[in-house]
Length: 124
Image 1 (cartoon, one colour):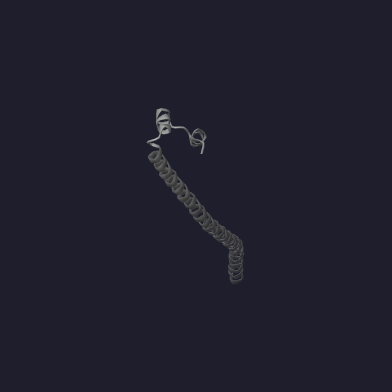
Image 2 (cartoon, rainbow, N blue to C red):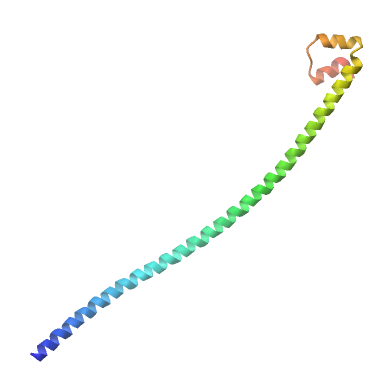
């Protein structure tokens, strides 16, 4: 009987050992998959980091461009204002100097012409 009890115990331990080996083999496969997934996540994180760096560079470039365009536009606006003020001063000076002449009464009777038409009529 001792021989059979010993044999049964050996068989039982062998089955438990086979089950443990199978379990650890599956566990090793899952750990490998987790590690490879982790590597994939590391690659994705690196790619995301590079994309963020490119986006930051693009945004800084857009800010520089917008600043340059804003400065250029402001310069053009300032020039246009200066030209408008100059034109208003000229018109005020002309209307004051020509108000006593007969030509001004002729011009007052007609609607205001464009700048080109005014020059043609007055023959400057």
